[in-house]
Image (cartoon, rainbow, N blue to C red; front, side, top):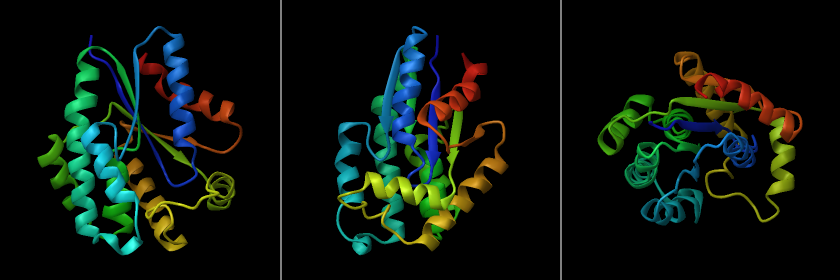
Length: 207
């Protein structure tokens, strides 16, 4: 039986990494084989590219170079981690996937969705999640969480300014509006347990 591929998306501070772990624990309690992964990363080659992408100054890569690196990392991740897990019947929970590239590099970065989708078509055959959970949080609440989390500072993408991240949020909302069958918009405010329950309700029909 084929597994399910679920991506968690959203801006900085939305709580995706925490909720991947919590949602995985719930699914395992139902007896499912679950793989937790992330982007950029999730395979040895993609983790090497992750370091190139997230370390250094903001000017290290042009928007085009950044998009190409993300697409290359995703191609390796899909081929070596995600597809094999799904083939054996596992559920794959991914902290970010294509929609982050569409929102960050395509939207806020100005490259446009068409360019990002072309790269994804070449690198990953246009592969998409069964369900995308978009975690949405007001900017003030996100900033408060980031202040607690990032005592050592943000990475080169997370550390960009408010205008950039407002563009990311706007692009995510447009993506969700355009694909209501795949997306579920999740209120990421409140306690971790409250958010987990919202996420569970958003995938119950797939169980």
